[in-house]
Amino acid sequence: MHIYKATDYQEMSRKAANIISAQIIIKPDCVLGLATGSTPLGIYQQLIDWYKKGDLDFSNVKTVNLDEYKGLPAENVQSYHYFMKKNLFDQVNINSETTYLPDGTASDSETECTRFNNLIEEIGGIDLQLLGLGHNGHIGFNEPGESFEKGTHCVALAQSTIEANSRLFDEGEIVPSHAYTMGIKTIMLAKKILLVVSGEEKADILHKALTGPVTPTLPASILQLHPDLTVVADEAALSKFDIE
Ligand code: GLP
Image 1 (cartoon, helix red, strand yellow):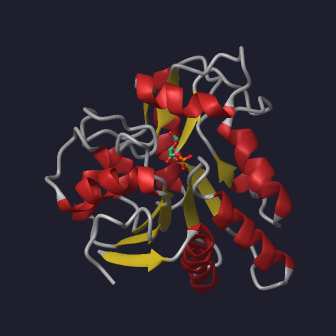
Image 2 (tube, rainbow, N blue to C red):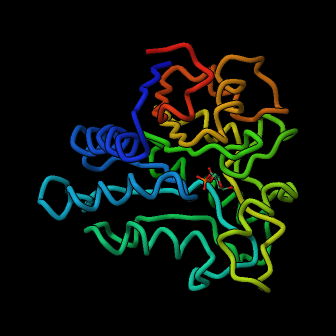
């Protein structure tokens, strides 16, 4: 495991974007596993800036996203489809035919999960998976208690996650209670993992995840066992670690 300590959110974003751009340069047709949430926003902005400068080419890149709310169509402003289009895809030269997310409107959840699992396999597996960290230690939408063996599946979101995510919804809008997510198994099969964490409120959970016991009650703890994990976090998030 490599841990990079950044002074602040901006430096964290730049460092993580650097790692992603290196992946694209080394393998222009790579498969990137992407994440939503507020943490990756600075990374996406940095990648867009480098693209606009002519330093990055997304034309052969394929992407798969970690998760999507069940019940939300791609056009819904709260959907992760919409988030990805707005914050990255529409601003770079990526082919929209090769950006994949679970379909929130699929009529049969099981069929949708199988489709998504097969798709990841068909495009060659994930070269680099970007991950944020939930306040309760979730990754993607793998909530505490989920088995480590699962591929893409449909989950009932923890009340704390619904509450944390409700800040992004307007008053009166219903925050979905279920979501599709890559499972821990899907995530662990990625060749490289890049975990990004910012802010003091995640310091404790990050420390437990990376130094405590590996247990399904703290989903991110499994990342300790990944052979190629890079953590990029700011000083505040790393405040419980004794590193320079
Ligand atoms: C959501 C997403 C996760 C993300 C988490 C943390 O629950 N499904 O993939 O990592 O939020 O989000 P943030 O970066 O906004 O703290």
